[in-house]
Image (cartoon, rainbow, N blue to C red; front, side, top):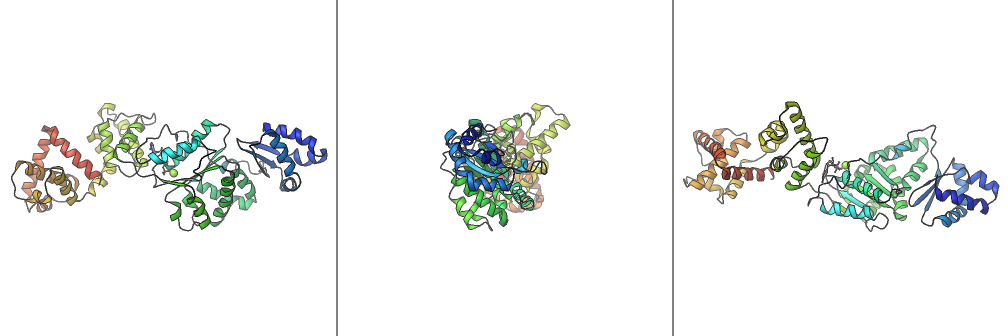
Length: 435
Ligand code: ADP
Ligand code: MG
């Protein structure tokens, strides 16, 4: 029960006739959050009567006890006939999606900073609405929920609602059937912080857009914070009503980009220590995986899980996770990237690394430095491309396949003997994986 409402009831009892009080006011159920007081009538008749005849007195009475509350008057959901529907209007936040569990890097620095600032200042943020957009698996949901956790930690009374967009659409659709649209709206409008995930999915859903527009305006006008995630800048969404686009673009729109190499490695290291994964990676090995899996964080997590399964099932020791083991464990995750490397790219990167030109690699020069670079390029082409020995030879000044075999053998030996050459090899591969 809301404390403000209990006090307000006493005030109202003295302010209005007892018959009015007991018939219309007493049956109201009150829900109080940091900034709103929702008064739920048992049916539409009571709601309409209150709106018409008693709203002013109620507002006045509540203001005497708490000036900061916005009042909503609606109908209580019919709990007995639809027991679970009301609860499903929003989804609890995932426990792990906190700021503490996010790795910070240049890809998310700005979005991270803005989200934190907004969450710390939920009532006075100038960034409303706030939209985090970017590709799949880059941490949009995580960041948005981190805002929810932080805002709630700062003020436990705050009403934080998290809604994946498709749940919203389903709720709207079912409420149209059950004639409960007003309750749904009331529910969302009671939020102090509304988090709507994957707002782009509202494209083309006209009825949902319309209802959303009203909820949005209500919250926005009541200075409630709204955060969206989206897979693209909202202004690019086709079949999104202009008035929604305009509203969205009035706020702060920030882009999450794929993490760069070092950040990917840092994410792998952090997640590998998580109790659910719990495998030991060296920095070197993390960089190696990160160099090959460049798409998004979700794929990095997939790789770690696969590696964990490999470690568990083969029972290799924790300390033994080497690059060779990674290649075996993650074979098909790593190979597609390698196969896509073009022979011209390899020649370009090798030439650049050794400060030579591409034509030096195909020339007849027998200078030691040039020979090493040529052999290295041939070795990497053999490793990364599916070309035959003959075809590789052709690309290096029409050399025959025995020269190619010789080059491969030479580099194989040198990789074992010389850390300097092994370093050359790894740097070039890293660059190729990063193209
Ligand atoms: P999106 O909503 O953009 O598709 P998610 O928020 O679901 O992506 O993130 C996918 C996974 O990657 C989640 O498990 C999330 O915890 C993780 N993740 C994303 N970014 C980071 C990061 N910077 N640090 C740690 N984990 C991250
Ligand atoms: Mg998401």
